[in-house]
Length: 284
Image (tube, rainbow, N blue to C red; front, side, top):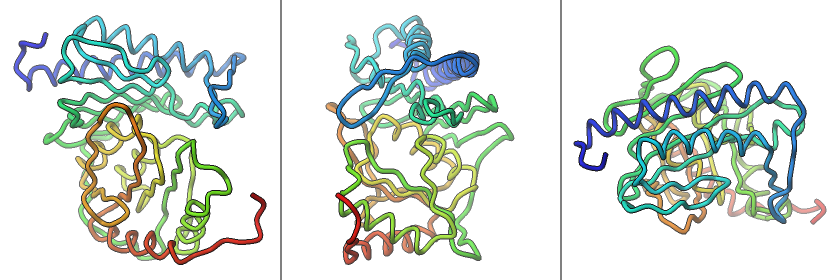
């Protein structure tokens, strides 16, 4: 398969990824009707369910069958070796596990393909509505209703923003507290969905105006960031520099700001102003 021309490979990869994500989504949707088996993963309180593991095995089966030489980074299985490390699949089989464990059916399936670390394909599937979004670098982003493209715009009222903090961030983290307070004070609504890929979808759809992440994990970034970029959104770090979303192993953390070209300066000022904010009186 590695001898196939890149454009043809991407066409095949997109078809395989969509098929895998949809099948995994159907398994998740069916599984939500029954009892969940839940295990705590680590000291951060992150959890894994039998549905995470089932969905991941479905996806891995599709990817290994068609691309046996590609490296895979999977949320639950870690890095799976390969003979060709120029291609790496990034798999989040169930983004929103903490939601479903409390009976909130808000989750997504995410699959990305990176070439030399650069995301070139992203697929996000939402199991409950059975909707799928795809993006191929340089070819645009597409959703259930067709192409996604949102030119620069500034909302007339206060913006609706999404917030993400990584699992290692504690409730007492002073930077996280200051950022949340600042963003909430300047927005019409600040949402935290516990499913970052769904936030990327909402941004790409134009449903929200901006997305800010603090010490966010990189497993969700390739598919979500590519979807946003290909829909016309801009991504920067906290200093306003264009974000480098290339995947490098071992996987680390990233701070990001995402939004339209008109929203980025405003969001950057908000994030920088949070450095002057001190939140006191709350328990550690």
